[in-house]
Image 1: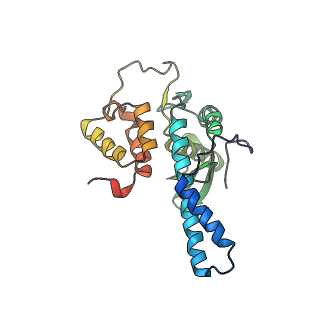
Image 2: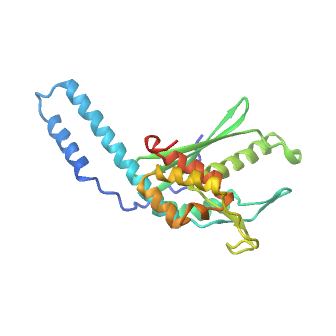
Image 3: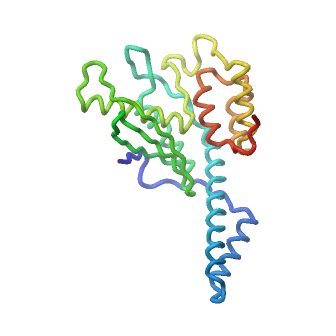
Length: 245
């Protein structure tokens, strides 16, 4: 079951231009396809090469659009209230990010699966050029406050959507009355955590590094509350062969 949070039509953001090398490869494949003497096995290999080129282009476009979008995503006011404190509601998050996502060619949908161990919520972030990424969360039904089965399912689903959407977009939240500034000094990451972030950043594509510098400036300036979500986000974008152990 997928639940999109965007209109059916998505305004096209500027499409990343194909690199000259990848365009040349595609042109060679197209010419070969028109030649009746081309070996079928060779043709299949060429088509696989074309698919890899297109996938790479889609990933590059996704990364560039993500980096640009991150500079525009604001922190979300925490207007929801529970016995344990405040939180940013799903409605506030969606209303805030929808137009920004649309501008940069992104859309998100959710898949909800009921399992033996609970409810799995999967968020899928799609870019107009074809690349997509997803994050899942498995959580038990929320039976607090004498909720019935339907209410428990709805509460857990809403919580899961909030969590995976914030993880996919690296969204931060703030108290609704502080106008974006905390009343107390923000606690920053520890030196050890800053080292972990620097290691991940070094293994990420240039677009991700540019976004990080624009958002935080330096690893030591990352708020401690952002660390877990940021580490998960960078881990997804890091290139394993470039990470240092």
